[in-house]
Length: 191
Image (cartoon, rainbow, N blue to C red; front, side):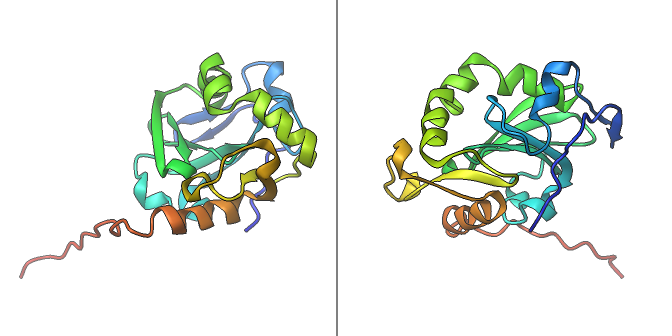
């Protein structure tokens, strides 16, 4: 699967009530395929059912993927409510960080927060991995091998570069294999 990354300032795109725009020039470098020191990329808002179909039923409060980190965290949004969250694939978990006026506001408030950049997406760790493997191309992430939930240590020299969408699909097959399928409700008229 190939999803188009945003290679320009999203100035003024309104998608289902969420205004996707950069609020300052400082956000412009994170769009597109250029390497930044932020260790994440925003992409053109894409339906979860298209981008991460195995994960989508488990996070019904979100309908859109808006970006991802160099370590494979996925940034999610709800186009109607403005809620934003992060999918943590190695933990098969996600967190709803609440409503934001824009994805840029979410990035400035959460993704660039000192706690997030030190504990969730540690810049020193990503820098060491980047020094070993080199920079990422569009739609690539650093993948711990073996995966942490299979005994991997996440030491910088244990990472490989891989496709974000393939990575997310494979991790979902491992992490969600034992979970029941989401319940489907069938509505029909009673005669």
